[in-house]
Image (cartoon, rainbow, N blue to C red; front, side, top):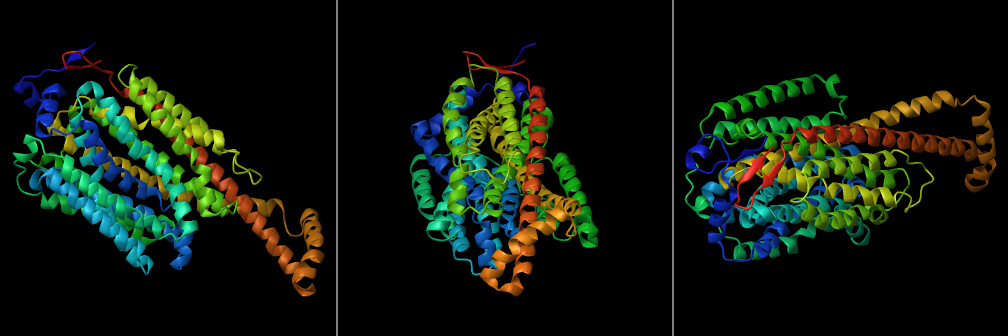
Length: 544
């Protein structure tokens, strides 16, 4: 049954959705700039911010070596950034209403750019993590503000194309990040993976200041008093989440008493935050939209699962090529680069199809593509070459273009401009939290499954076994000539142990990719909880 969305003011007050046409006219009146110029202006900031979530992924081993840290500690560079993003994302709507969206957006770009310089100049891991926190805080508002400006700048029928352009930043940037980061790391230093943001940030400030204007409802907004309690609780539970994700594997998770207390604090503060936000008249984050708009609630669930899967995959693939196969950062980045090419091919197509095909079918195809390709990743072995996984990596990027754009379109199609700021904050918050959890779960699974497989291999091939002794005997003379007779046998044992570790790590990566595939296929089933959305010629919206 199709439901025609009402347009009278009383319908909006009752929770119904106003046709976006009048909202677009209001936004268009605020700016005479071409919407595509506005789109490019805000996409520079978004592309730069999202790129930084993954550009450091291939540089993690180099960062760890430079800072005298372990690979596990180096992953804090990724998770601290995502969690700091999560703190600012929900609050971005209030700050935009209070200080003006354009002014707040420019301030965030400036903070992000300065923090990027501090990341590149960091003398220690502690300084780097602190700079990443400020960088994440500055970047937290860039995505929801850019998305809201982008959607308001286009009429309803072209919002699919607008989301395709937004998808270029949010989907292509994470998959191009490892390639660019690898090239910068190998050519100069890992520090240039952060320095590259400086010229992009300067250009973004210039273009936003020149072409972006606040619409009347932003200029005339009365946001009310800042929700201090809500913001404090948000900082508390997201901070606890970051510590748990960062330190969990290192301290054996719930084997540590302090981590159990941290988890309890997380649960209590999160529950209090949700209860406070639900009861307060003007909360920092208005979660009532999740109950008022079914499509938005389903979209939030899907973007959480997508964030979990894509960030885990983006973090794991370069790590596999470097840690198991011994590739350089640049080579590892080049190997995964076809994923970005696949996304570039798919995004124009999805922009064309988004208003012509039921988006639920597009999402089903996208999750199926992504899931099947992830299963291909689970067939990795120690003999593969740089081009062995070319086809599945390319198809993964193509499939991702069929995911983010339709999810964003379906989730926001029936929202008014007044709801857009709060909604995009929640939407991007859940994607980032999903990404943090995905990276942490993948890292933990990798370490634990590697230990598990190492024990199994050692049990199946004991040192007293004939096969093991024969191989040591063959290697002993060769290594003895190179290192000295006394060192031949210890060197042979060390070489055998290194092979054992490589094989165990390989099987651990296989396990992680299989689990990511399970999550992806489960998300494909959630897609059909969406209600179909169609736009009529008169600008009204129908949900079926």
